[in-house]
Length: 150
Image 1 (cartoon, rainbow, N blue to C red):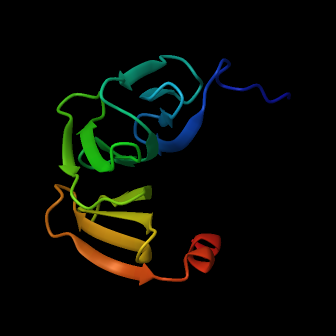
Image 2 (cartoon, rainbow, N blue to C red):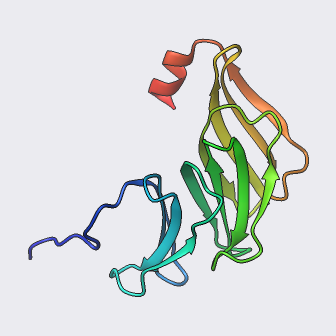
């Protein structure tokens, strides 16, 4: 069996996540400035978010609430929308410095993200999935080691 790519064209996939319940793949494209989804076999491909996005660097799918979270590195904010792109809103936008990765923990209702602050070093933060209760977990001044390990 020869492996064939699911998609062809000019995709610049910066992040990907999977919804096991519906067998759908979600991805962000930093070149087209979009967030899209398709079936695992590549059919039913659709752009779910395409306006007001600058650099969608990292996405994470919450399989309980059916929400997709993403970091926009260009706009320095964390946003959330329903799985179809509806009900979009920014949940964190103040003091989001160079965000790079996000992950959601659906069972606890928490989101975690990392980034680089040139003045204070690398960091990992968390908040509730609505953006409340923001807490700094790790602040590492030695950024090189942090990114090589993390």
